Image 1 (spheres, helix red, strand yellow):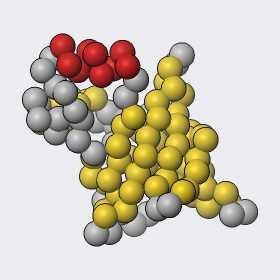
Image 2 (cartoon, one colour; image 1 turned 45 degrees about the vertical axis):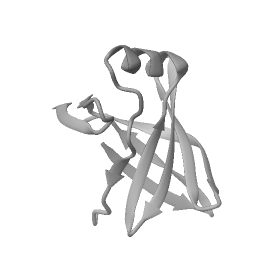
Image 3 (cartoon, rainbow, N blue to C red; image 1 turned 180 degrees about the horizontal axis):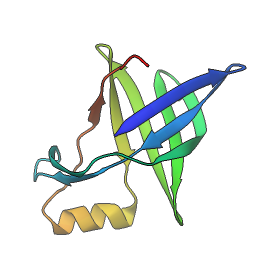
Image 4 (cartoon, helix red, strand yellow; image 1 turned 30 degrees about the vertical axis):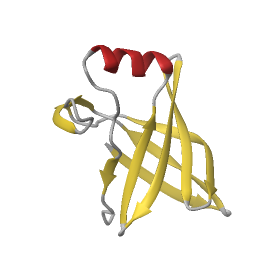
Length: 106
């Protein structure tokens, strides 16, 4: 996963690129099955109480995220839909742990 944030005229924006991953039963990423390649813009960006929330459009679906900074790293939580949670539960995964994003210089 790659998240690029920008600030233009005081407004936060950016884009995100997601790959495909396999989650273990404890909700952590066990393997990357496809690296992040294509970016999509983020929207509905808001910063409240230290939490950056945003969304991205994925064909007909909208994926929502929240990110917090913890010890200089971003902890990105994917806000799963009811259908996504049901699909993961059928695979024995009851929760998905936040993903850790590290700051990289451009």
